[in-house]
Image (cartoon, rainbow, N blue to C red; front, side, top):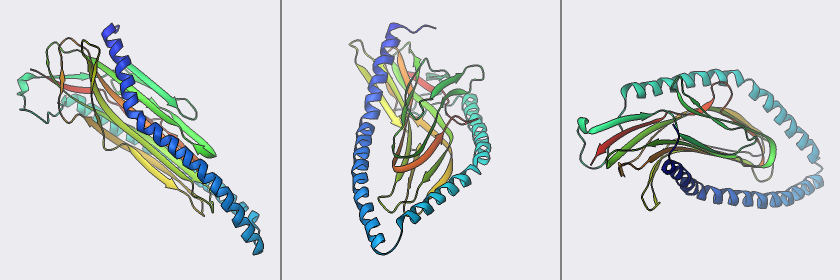
Length: 327
């Protein structure tokens, strides 16, 4: 079904507002981190010259240390490849568990929890489920830029965000992504709306941080899930309520004088709901959005990959469950 002019306007204004809200602090943090990395690199260069000079005076060949560190890195990279098949097999089990959860939620027709005000009687609550977003929006600044959003309409398994980032050892690596899954519903009466959804993370990461005697390299991986509901009044003002899940992905790794590397599997389900009902006006579209925000910071010599696309790897959004009570 074609979107109405009011729905298209809400999608445009609402998505832009959410992008501004969610990315403002992130953009500043990214700029500050990159600036700090540039300063650290300049300081490292000076400290390394001093270290080489001191070792030379002590009769130590620093090139031998470099060669040893390079062999450690090559050996660690070979070791990590041994875990690929186990990680992929685990991802298949994770995907099965996530789909079982989604099917259970749809089967029980879960009602969003109303946390404030008098509890409505079961007869007064209209329950609904929105399985498919009417619109998606994707800001892909990955390396490479291969992100995609797909929706499985026949199996009713939700929508999938897939991408795979990787980099060799570089001074600075800073891919990021913002994905919007926008659902639409129009109430026929004034009332209050409770919403609920899930975002399931099924992926893997690996990292390789070469040894260094200077400022330690760092790798940070951060992903968050946010649910939002928006409605526009007759004057064109967009009213918004948001809630961010306490889960997501928050990983941090740092290097040192010895090589540091590893693999990790992600099996995380974020449960998303507002802390209180959202007041809505009749016959005006309501947009409910799930937003996935992801960042990687690799600074001062990090090799890494983040995989949410191989085989059953993905970030899966399970649609919107809602409960509406007329006022």
